[in-house]
Image (cartoon, rainbow, N blue to C red; front, side, top):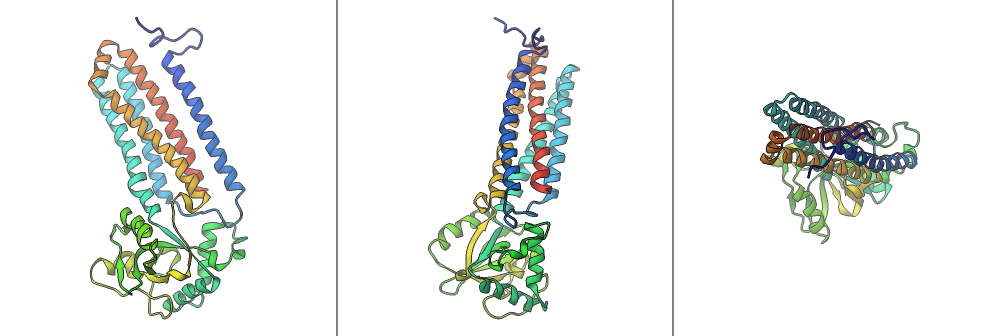
Length: 349
């Protein structure tokens, strides 16, 4: 028995069944993402001054992924047009190009952007005096008269673009961000964390914190502050902070070449840029994670359409198969549209 209106338009809606179904589904998706976007905006507008993380997203990475998704929207239309022109081989070509773009998007997100965030840490200090030791010794290292003023500027750019309220926040609460490149144990032995492309491996980033630190085996952290908030030149320093001695091999390059030691006793809070870091990152991972799952779902559907069983459907009923690709394209355009909204609110605003 044939199901009616799989290729012909319904008289009541003017659409075939599949297109009616996808528009109803997309309406529910609009309500889902609309609620999340609204929650983000309300949290952002209602946040206390100096508590919302800014300037932590790489806008060029976000822009690249935006261009990739826009290109994939074009290629999936070309795949559908190829079917309308009765060219199945060209359809397969453009479908594969769309899948490659989608995989590229997920690759950037899951293998570069998220690992970079989850291995980047913030340190806040137990007291203003402990924080001042770090920043004062840093000024001595570089010959600057006041590194604290430089920190205030960098911190103000990150948390308060209007620069109106950042001065009210105590020095101990202004986070020093960077990478953990090692630690010194209670016996005074240094342990260095391996790195690839200057980003510590995920296993190192999590394992040392959940095992070594949890068991209180760490006396001091060897910490490489981020380039945008730390002086570029280095010299000798005394006290609680020192420049890590250059060692042969990987430890004398990259982050470790300009690392400092921070006593565990001076650290109030240590957190990577993970969901629990702040409200910003909690909403960031929620929004981008849900979107990434939609991208993954679209990839699975497009791969299914390339199976031999769908080629047989094409030979038997080409209009019905073309309609399936049109429906998939509508879903994919919605996924791209969501990202076009995510990019500016998360990366630019």
